[in-house]
Length: 318
Ligand code: SD4
Image (cartoon, protein in one colour):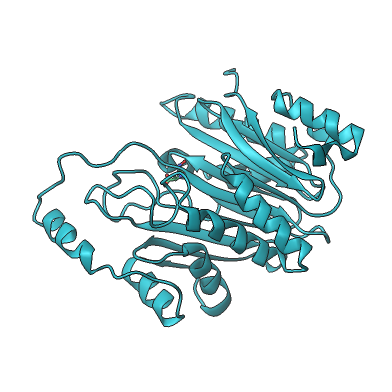
């Protein structure tokens, strides 16, 4: 338990409860900036985001800088260019960003050879009249704006082989992970972002939930924000993060909303709870929540008092 988190006894007790997975969101109202991010590497994103706030930067800077840190690290081999290759053997990246005030968003999918997709998503939001760009067009847009890139000519033989029907024998299907980062700034405004290489071994051109607004990420300035990670196909068919935000609008706290969303998805889905999806959520009051369908799920929460990796067990089926 971080010492920084111990500065206020009530918060300390709360976080002990958090660590043992018995989240008490009602007690977790936090003043000032707060950030929550998926997976243990999310603490590095939180760190950068909180530093951005400490430096007086905007919530969108906090989101972008936080996610860039994970893209830079390609920390678990599944975010950024070091992430999982597709079935033809090269990475195609997805990202999006959303700002609460103004309900603005930008998104890129199937982006090739770009070091920081989250920055391109932000450029789409701020400099383009569209919301989402994909594939070659997204790369052109990125290069036009001078972002850091790598040569993708080495992908050409893999693309040609794929088109000819020659498929790698052992595509890397080992895993998938995504950084999703939700922030609330000192004035209580919300924003969020998401970046991933997507599921390892995906069919070239496959787009997951991560760049789809309302699936992998949704931010509603009046209510709260939610982010997803896991098998994108199982999140996007249910508009997972939109559902969570709407449940919060109806009065649920973030924890209850994340759990309820998974129960609803499982009730409707032929796979039941075998969905491999996890969610985080943050509301206007600075309360956080997280839930997972079929595995324990670590995530990271930071306030000005500290940055902590917490975990929830999979939901109990009902
Ligand atoms: C996807 N949702 O592309 C992403 C992958 C992910 O944990 O989040 N994995 O389906």
